[in-house]
Length: 462
Ligand SMILES: *[C@@H]1O[C@H](CO)[C@@H](O)[C@H](O)[C@H]1NC(C)=O
Ligand SMILES: *[C@@H]1O[C@H](CO)[C@@H](O)[C@H](O)[C@H]1NC(C)=O
Ligand SMILES: *[C@@H]1O[C@H](CO)[C@@H](O)[C@H](O)[C@H]1NC(C)=O
Ligand SMILES: *[C@@H]1O[C@H](CO)[C@@H](O)[C@H](O)[C@H]1NC(C)=O
Ligand SMILES: *[C@@H]1O[C@H](CO)[C@@H](O)[C@H](O)[C@H]1NC(C)=O
Ligand SMILES: *[C@@H]1O[C@H](CO)[C@@H](O)[C@H](O)[C@H]1NC(C)=O
Ligand SMILES: *[C@@H]1O[C@H](CO)[C@@H](O)[C@H](O)[C@H]1NC(C)=O
Image (cartoon, rainbow, N blue to C red; front, side, top):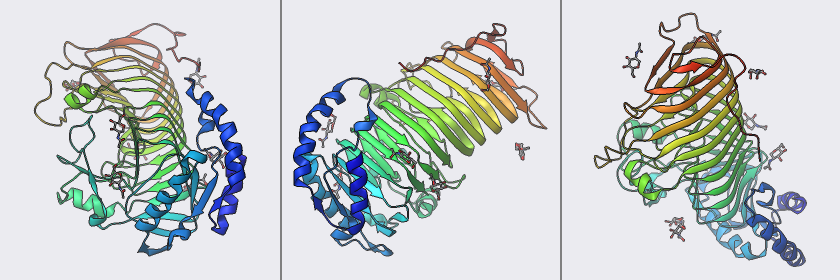
């Protein structure tokens, strides 16, 4: 980490540093730390450590005037720096300025570092955007059949990748995409701002993402992912600007993030209907903590709607939601299959919500008509405690699937303050069962009141 900090300061001079001596030293130490990495406990501190070479975007002809295209500069810089992967890896410094670019691909053992006054500006020229295959677990693009535009910052099959900075910005300039989407003028699915596929040891930290054309951060088929200290801002009516969507990933930690968006702040996913079932890759071991979310038309934390590889072992704590549609939302449908299970949430503070809890088994939305009518998702062991919500219109809609109820739902120590004009029915529960303790207003009968002092489980860190 110290070396890394030293490099970051040297980079300001814009030199390519190749520290031969350091490489040897890092290699010796690297062997030990690589061994440590193999252990199943997830040591985030090893991600991005020991970078031995670095360069500035300007070394590759970058021009930060907001007008000149830097697509080639980014790709040349990363191609060149990728040579240092076997020697501890490299760091690309993006200096102050506005760096217009089309999409570019990252490499392994690589850090992209944005100065606080650097903005990466996404090109609005659709011709700059290559298309790639749909995700195998989705079978098609989310907006349209077939291919999808590649994400602005993209990586696949990588190890040890960091996107960070002292709060530099990535601006997706999404407005042209949103307009084209709304007018049905796009042939393919809109790009995400950052997508990492089939990668491990990924860190995205201390940057600000604004105006993404579509989802903001999409780790998919990844493991050991840390997303820390990022700010995501998009107009609250912009289409599908989800904040962070861990999708078929294992071991993901999302912490200290502030998100204002036009869709779910966090949407946990794992593939869509028959494609997701076939691909069979769950999202598991997910931790979300110290999140602040503003999303008037969507959820603070959503599980689904695409959950066909399964979602399990999710822990969320210390969550603040302001002006959001719902706090915890499970979206699923017949055809999704698999499960959402072992979800633990505690310490949520909410202000101005339509509904605190919303679980729906009739979300619909299928990739095509070939989904399995008998693929019933199992929703069970959902535990939520220590919730305070104010200015709420309706406490909960909990609607399972007929004949396939959502089970083992537990709510405890939940205090919901109502708005001036709340709904007449505060809890609408069908096809669910579970327990409650110390919940006000009094929950539906299907959540059997166990009396005070019966807290829902929240497993402490191992
Ligand atoms: C980036 O990676 C994708 C997927 O591997 C590939 O299709 C695309 O051509 C790459 N882009 C560049 C500029 O190399
Ligand atoms: C990336 O990894 C996936 C899963 O291991 C594999 O199927 C795919 O072929 C790899 N792609 C490349 C370009 O190596
Ligand atoms: C980063 O920048 C964003 C946007 O300007 C700002 O809202 C946020 O507070 C900043 N974060 C930090 C840690 O300075
Ligand atoms: C992000 O910035 C904070 C505050 O400056 C710092 O404490 C933290 O270590 C940084 N995180 C990463 C992963 O670099
Ligand atoms: C309560 O919520 C309504 C919207 O449902 C909002 O207009 C109002 O400002 C909120 N009141 C307070 C005190 O936050
Ligand atoms: C109930 O929840 C509130 C809000 O999170 C918390 O301050 C309090 O300690 C909880 N009470 C118990 C008994 O856990
Ligand atoms: C309660 O939920 C059921 C099932 O979704 C729905 O049919 C019914 O209209 C709802 N009732 C009220 C009063 O909202």
